[in-house]
Amino acid sequence: MVIIMTIDRNELIRAIENVYGKKGMLEKEVEDLCDFILSFFGYEDYVLDNVLTSAERDVFYNLEEYGILTTFREEINIIKGKAWRINQWYLDREKIHKLAQDKKEESKENNIYDSIFKNM
Image 1 (tube, helix red, strand yellow):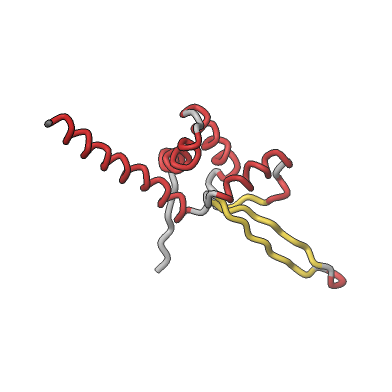
Image 2 (cartoon, rainbow, N blue to C red; image 1 turned 180 degrees about the horizontal axis):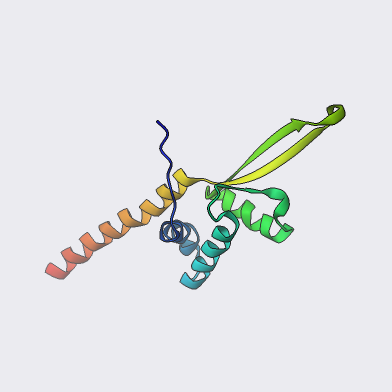
């Protein structure tokens, strides 16, 4: 049985906040980056690399460094033995789920300590 994990906008925002928010990215910028990512993927789980501009590809490479995106290359032999390379970008759903959960756990710990100090 294959389990298909879905990602909604809020979860992707939490994951991006946990990566880029810690580096100083503002909330509005996090939301813009999330919308930027979702504008490429929509209902699909992959994007062909050849539809990206060089600036967009740079953003994708940066997202790959943090595990939000991953790449896949496939070679297909076409007429006369020539190879055709297809590069694709995928949302790393498992990593996004993990990154989104990190903040929830962190905020729970902060709430525990806040309540301890309030009771003192």
